[in-house]
Image (cartoon, rainbow, N blue to C red; front, side, top):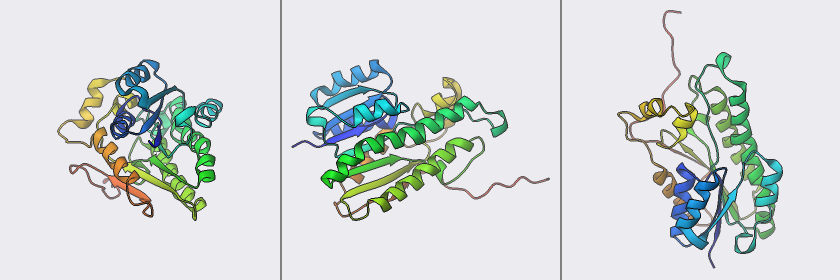
Length: 250
């Protein structure tokens, strides 16, 4: 019997690559997203293996209703990939837009919580399941302008670890995948559609790709059942963690 995976934010980037990869291996894929046209296109591409759910992950009631009671063959969720997330702006804290801060907290934290809470009771009842969080190296290494975005990804890291503690003794795995520099729509969203500025982020680099992330998720899901990858950082070779910054002359 085919297994079921729910991928939030399936209309672009990591989510889209993950939906395609799992469908190619015979999985039933539920994909959420706000853009109906992209969901429709993905359904045409993947056929009966794909269930599109037009959904704003920030809407608590809608998430509970739609993900908490999926129809037919998609009802029992084997894997949840909490991929939906966003970064807005790169201004220092005193110049930020509060709406941007709210949107990041509502999407990266609250939306992830809503999706997890919707599918987790069924996993616990069946004593079987797997949750993959899409964190970020930003949750481990702060940077100027990252203020709230870094904070949201630090929350994801700690929530994933605490969830593992809650689930100790149950056959439910929890991973936090923490990508570094990856090419996707991420920077274009952060810079409010400024494609030229977004392109400069990747200029002269060979970043990680959405397909790389999808392959990593596939590997995590297919590790032996007794193995749990608590956290996994993934960076391109051209990037590495760096120490604290120092401003001289102060």
